[in-house]
Length: 538
Image (cartoon, rainbow, N blue to C red; front, side, top):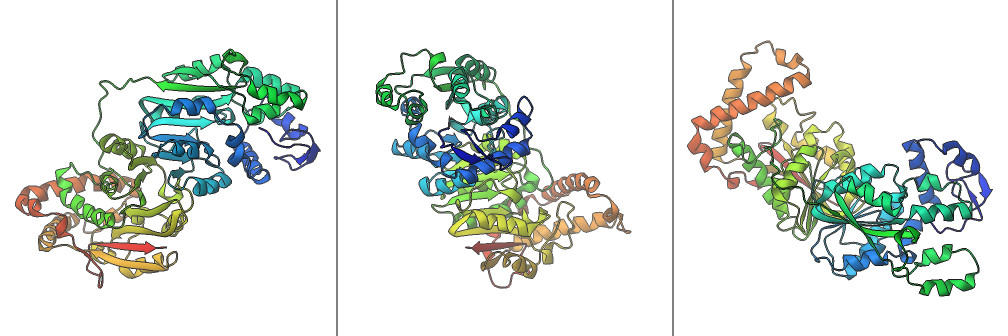
């Protein structure tokens, strides 16, 4: 790190001191040799972001990973690339200049994400912890980081996560200080707090061993020249620095190089791996289950409507479930990210629908979207709102992620129609009036539509309601209302499948003739709609 450190404040306690460190000697001594609590490390980097807001945004400009970039240039231009610790977008800009377009950029600091929105407007921006990546298995062909892994307290967890999100044969390009030379430099310059902000430096041998434990083969790249940052750190007369800038580094043995630039290739171990069917939860729609055919078509009709809003847009499908809706939206959209809190659903969706230049699946909570401010044009959220304990907080979170001119499209059951069908999975159902009031607390422009049913759908639903009423008569005292939700939910799941199977067997011709066209979507009086569909524009 090259930062002017003459007189400054300790980033933990705020005490003013003279020196070249980020921490005062008291704070440095307090945590030396101890496990640093996550909240303390978080406070340090938040303070670093406040005190030096442009450091992470400009560091790459004078500490360019030249060998890494040269090797990256040999890859296919349609490679799916994830950059970790993207800073202000220096590497992303270089990659875009070289023709790479399928870029996902990740960082944690607010200033970096703000800079990325300006410098890399066409990339997907994700706020993510490098030790807990919110992406499905095998999502990327390439992962890149420059001066990142040395800051991570658990480098083993990080490498394991990178191995998980890389496709077989994928590559991890990284640049990191060489522990053997960096330790000597830090001692020479009196940087007593280096252990705090560089807890995971590696030597060339340690780098190979660490990555080898996670199925990687490592190749150390030859850095051609010293970078601007490395030259600025050289001790001795400044007049020697121009000479040092011309010295080739490729001839230096790896243990003597100031930084290590390397490519780690993930070995292909996927042959013969089996996949399992997706678990039915009672709410998740699975297209392959015959008993859910009508429900699937009802949901698909809403996605087909949303596809008309997605042309050329960056889209998030919040609560994507099985992934069929996100896959449909990927047709007209520029980019679609399917997000679900269930890792099983994310893994299934990624395995079934793949990761393409228009489609990715990410694990995350819709109440805390791992998306940067103003980063997307359209958020779709179908049959999710009724499950949320704080729907207003969710709407505000969506509003945060939408770019100017963006929109939210959501569906939820119409309480006026579904009220006779109590669902233990739902926290709160909405009437058209109640939904409108909720949405207008966050959005000024709200269009309320309804998903209606044809005569065939009406006949099917009437038969279904008849079976539900028959089962309800078995509990005339309403004892099911006193059963804890955690007990009632699995009962509801089992009964749902039994009811749908019986209904489908006795009405095969009726079920077979229903298509998405039997679920028209229109505005006006929506009190009789099966589902409510709202489009909220920024």
